[in-house]
Image 1: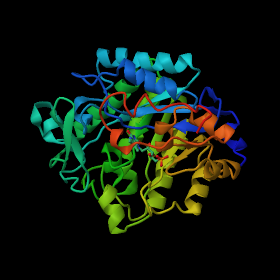
Image 2 (image 1 turned 180 degrees about the vertical axis):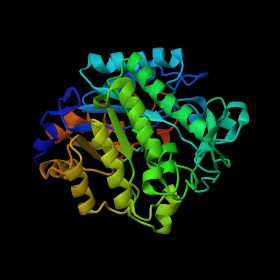
Image 3 (image 1 turned 135 degrees about the horizontal axis):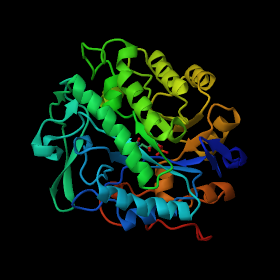
Length: 376
Ligand SMILES: Cc1cc2nc3c(=O)[nH]c(=O)nc-3n(C[C@H](O)[C@H](O)[C@H](O)COP(=O)(O)O)c2cc1C
């Protein structure tokens, strides 16, 4: 098998990447308590995976209201910045390039996670009935819950949020990150604004595609101004399906995903953003992205394009050869195989994933997956 295409260096913004293999954002819920501070163990976990050409952190909340799951890390206090420095130093010592994923869950939260047990905030007061938040029920233990009914953001609160994104981007640079990624995927706040289901606003942030993309556009502008568009990427989940199963998964199926996400990518192109990352539907029997959509994204966007979602090395290499993708992310395989790029290059077998240790816990299933030992 020839995966050579995955090992050609490429440029992303100001950075030269050593290969096309991406370690994507993966929530692991192991930040230090109290305060959701990145730990030494997290630094070790990222260090182990720095063979990736490009890495993005797990979703990292930009403010207290942005949290929807217990123990996810933040990037809005001095302590957070100090904690993340451990991660960025460890990755840079291994020659890695790492961006922070800036996350605000919006309505996918529970009042138990919110300051003063308030309602979560969202574009409209529409509950995310099909999603789940995760609350702590004791030290180190917790449970999935239906998100609370959110409260609609005012226009001035939306402006404040745009500033919080820009501040978080500056914090990320202070923490030593090479850039940031806006999490506009998977049904969280930015995706809620884009969605005609979650967003039923009557002002300039709701209604037309242009209006629903305004929040994204303002965040892109603010972060570009704060740290430069060449250190910014954006992640989307365009969903080309309206089956019940897909609605249950994310609840945010667009009536015209092609138009919506082509317009979204045009915003990134106009701003000069370094990359767009497309998180494809990744459950069993998930709908494929139409080839015409992939081709159009390539035609209109001059930055790097990343795809993720159940890729094998073969399929990823083919996408790069066909020039539909520049970079391919491997999520679950990279959790279980810290030396994934080397395993792909040499054709070595992969470790199996332990699904029971994905979220929360200790170093088990986190930093103890072995590198290849030649005997498997
Ligand atoms: C445990 C886990 C946590 C995830 N957390 C995030 C996250 O914080 N942010 C995000 O954008 N995507 C997240 N994802 C989605 C992954 O980045 C990726 O798109 C997905 O796992 C599909 O790739 P794969 O099939 O190679 O695993 C998560 C996925 C998993 C399995």
